[in-house]
Image (cartoon, rainbow, N blue to C red; front, side, top):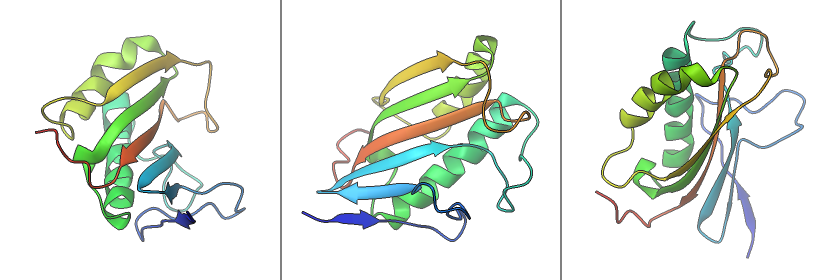
Length: 134
């Protein structure tokens, strides 16, 4: 069983190479905590939690496709928000990408993220090819 690093053109790997955005092991994709950081790593895309969550899910979707899967393969998401009152905005964005049985989910309020403008971070686990939800 080998570890396969997955990348997508729209989701650049960190310049410092301190983490991987997506690793696949034995058909399971582990997607790192993604944020709405712009591709230049200097700014943040989207002003509100909904916009940031949508940008994050777009990145996640690109990584899932590159890994050979889709959102239907996602079984677990962990969502970090800097203000718990943003949960409805994030859930709205989540409902735009998942259908049927939603993946199991954990929502956690944290004091801050890596950049002061970041409001949301989301990581995921997907079983590539297991798309039995509808």
